[in-house]
Length: 107
Figure 1 (cartoon, rainbow, N blue to C red):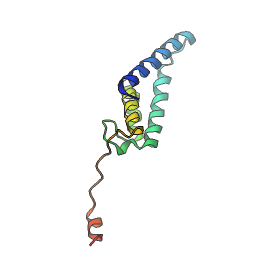
Figure 2: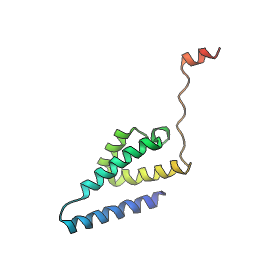
Figure 3: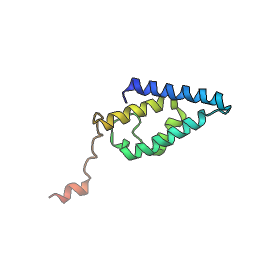
Figure 4: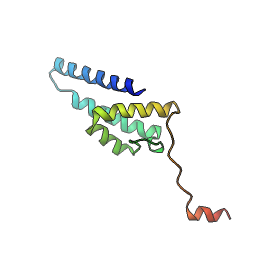
């Protein structure tokens, strides 16, 4: 999703969680943060986040920790990067240079 929709979505689900916490009498914020961080970790692995240029192109464990610790910034950022990947707007990282072994096999 575009960055402004990602921020709006994040604020909306956070607000709903705060409201729901008041209704049920239990703080649901931790469930929201951990739940979305787990989803982000699983989804980032599925979409191949590590292959793209981004400030959050790491493996699922690092992405989980980053989103869980800095949720208010990390979650909308992930949603925006995910949107760019799904719509073909994200730039791939440069492929690794061929190793010496690979270059000598071509001769």
